[in-house]
Image 1 (cartoon, one colour):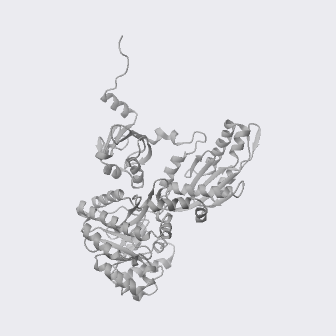
Image 2 (image 1 turned 30 degrees about the horizontal axis):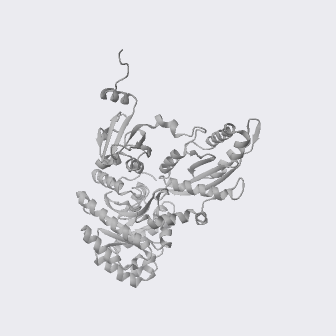
Image 3 (image 1 turned 45 degrees about the horizontal axis):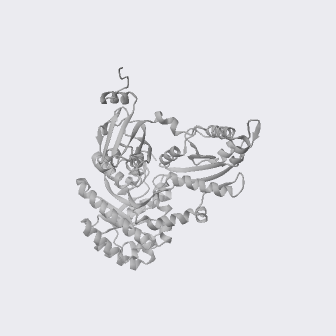
Length: 553
């Protein structure tokens, strides 16, 4: 009897994958090798096929999605799933799905397909809204956009009682109806999700009426299910966040909104609460964060990210500013405002400062060795409040330069006005020693309260940094324009370089250049980037001859 079982040879497999617009992938981190098989060209992955390095994947991903590409590459425990939505240059929006394998060495494998193929699996099956994982992924992208964002989480009161009274199937009809009402109440650009059994979430630009008011108005209307009149009430938690380079991680923002929901429930049915730091101090989350923080530096969880600094006249990349980020194993990527105050309370700032300076110095030395065009690249590191008085500060600079071979001026230390003015005479001595040790010196946030300009002429600074508030408000505040212009003129008179923080778009960059400003940094060029992303940015800048800048903010 003939064998009717199908036999899939390589050619048949490739033809089937190509016809289905699907790609199979295999990632071998120990070999730094990513293999692709299937319709790679149709999905915009042609430059990566049939195999490539991790750097190639990062380079092909659009800049806002490079952190997501990193999620594909990051080694995890065997059996850990991978589900990532990534946009590639010139390609489709694709979903990468796979799993870390238990056999055959350290590797992960899976399938890539256009987002439309997986669209239904990104939605909550009961309401048709986004599910929690997809909501977090989309929110992470949305929060990269400048502007004020509002995240609201609403918890349906007494769902358990509804389940008991109506049964689960009929109670599900209530949830489905609320999901439909939610979708009808908000414009298409709002992110809507069911993030828990009885929880809905909305992320939208801040507006009037607020998202919380719109949500309550839409959902707290009577509905009739199985002959019963249901009058739903909601406990609502809200949090606002400024999008852009310093935006919080989406998972952290969702946690804050859910913390506010718990506070709202304490006010009875139909309560509401806005997130505030007092909620953290009143809960256990702060204690847990403190416990985690004690070992975070030892586990190398707190690391420098790098924001580009660009010469405005040519667009050439000049250097980076190193900014601390905490890769928390459960809460995701935490920004400085989420852990630095706690570091200060726990007396960890000196340890953190020394670690940041050492890691940034070694990273800069590596880039200068590996990239011939990066020979003039610099890196700036912030000195925390009081760190100028740290006994080992000068010797640390000397040791880092000796270990790395960095030339004088390549490592730049940024000092705030407040630190200098606390004891100007003492500051002048320490800054002089740092300059002798080979560090360049920048006065950070200039314009926010320098008590006596006479001291500026006595201190060995190379650079003035204009506070981002004045830069961002130039278009609407004539006083800000005058302050920026004055600082630039002062820098020119004292032969100091001037760096403007908070450059959000090309229009701002042109305005600053017309005032004579030397350098700019801000979200218009790039947010703070991981070392891998920064290296990709560095390569692109030197290949293109200029750092990319957003046309509009």
